[in-house]
Length: 455
Image (cartoon, rainbow, N blue to C red; front, side):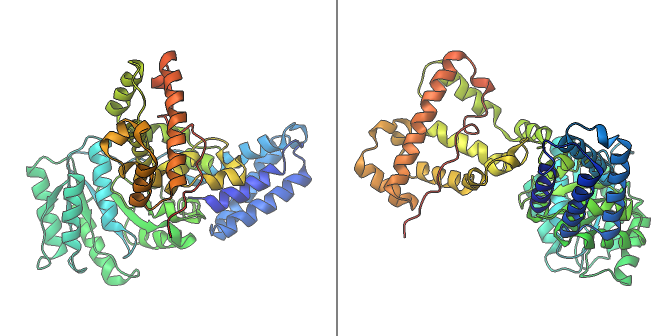
């Protein structure tokens, strides 16, 4: 997310390196920032207000005495971006008397039902809440069945409903059921439309009145840019929203929605949906997002992902194995590739590391997560004996592995060479007793060349 905007802003502030921040170069930089925000599809009014705020703050910082124009300008832009998006994360109000009702609304095609499941998993795993979900969408074919499947996947309690019931009857019954079952949170999925219409708004308003939800969240596609903010505002005028969830944020290279929603609607962005998997939901932290946009990384989110997704038992077993002097084999290598995939791949990690955006273009181009996936496929094509004792892999075995993985023999040779390098590094680290402090093995390896597939 924000790739295009981040690249443009990085070029702008990069041009200030080694200079004093003067009124002249500040005006040039502001023009570039304005152009970058407009190209990111940020609402025009928001852009104008943002530029005025940056200019005013810069003038108040005694720009003539600023020794480093780059640092001074980045600091000002970062602060203004944070304020634009809301300063802090607005979490859900879960302190109310249970069951806390969360009403989820949105147009068709925004990923609303999937987001309900993601939110249920988020609350169950990270907030330790007992969560129930119900679908009041009696219009879209298979909407209820879809939520039932997703609820089973995320281990949320599903309250059944049918298309023969009215949405109002469904939510009243679900609320009563959630109370008797002592659920902490009840998430209600509502019907969407291709556009905002009077009938939909009337129905949502009636559900809102019946449930009196603690949270009313509007799900909107981040890829629609400033239209996301305008749609949220129109919806808020009919039903009082408490927040917005941006979906498909990983596919949005511009970032206009994230930068516009709060300013246009006055409502906070509470979550971002990333990826199709049920764990692809992040709390929206303005300060972290601003840091990503300016190429400053997002180490806190990365640490949280490591804590949540990395298999600590698996990592501990590997550490104990290396300490005992046993060799780092290809099965261990395969486990490390799996750990990397759990973290969203190397590209996801680089996005959150400070200064990664400043890597040479050719170095960034070599970081392709498909490469790591291909390494895993080659290891999966080996026998258990070969993975544990890589030295037995001779010419005929290499041909079989290459054929089974759709690669070439030189790709297998490259994998074995990389494994040898990892093995030597692990042996040194094991002797020093620093295994636990390693970046899970793989993160510090040089990016591999892209394997060529067999034709």
